[in-house]
Image 1 (cartoon, rainbow, N blue to C red):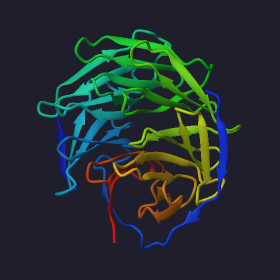
Image 2 (cartoon, helix red, strand yellow):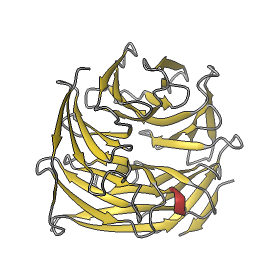
Image 3 (spheres, rainbow, N blue to C red):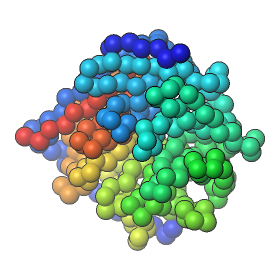
Length: 331
């Protein structure tokens, strides 16, 4: 029963940064409490109807927020303690999630509440992490401690796994570029990898020494941005040339940049989780400029964020049991 409430070789270039004037872009951050206490909303996703979806990792639910009305519904999952982590909507509005504690990929039909589970047969792949769809409707996902990336065909339910070339690389965030190639970051080492969607062959790109890319985003020009959690940088990889540029995050070396996304105009947005309160940071690649806003609730670690077609952001503030919308406007 659903519960409902109203509420490759690389060339490195280090670049200096500029903090732009605060009036350049205006931001309003709205947050809502998740109804179930200590739910730990982990990742957000955007539904095709504009709804904000989130995983309740410790409450074993998926949640849906209507940002216009504040209505929240929570959908219980089939397997107890499945630990939903990442999630993504398909074109029909079904919500696919990774059962991080339960070694499966799940699909929720929001109209009926029915949950379908796709079990991962390899026992080494116990912790599926982040899912993403490509343009052909294939679901790709990372397996962090198992050191795999996976592919699931929704038409057949078949799952294929490919081990990351670097041992203990901890595959983490994953995105798909405009050509249908998935990229994932290797949080356990200083690498980003590209997957051939046909053969699942993996090519790795080496980042600066000491970098630990945790989440990843791709802009419309197919440049790959990553948050360097360990060193406090925002980085950019050009997969065509192997060139890497990086910029010190405004919060400094210990700012722990984490969740990141890009809007359709090529602007990169991310959160600093090592500063208090956590921040929302806007990076303009053309001007090489940053703007920063504090998250009203403090954030409690923004682990992931997604952009909407309207160029707003959906966030989940796991440590304070909230979800939110970052509304952006130009002056």
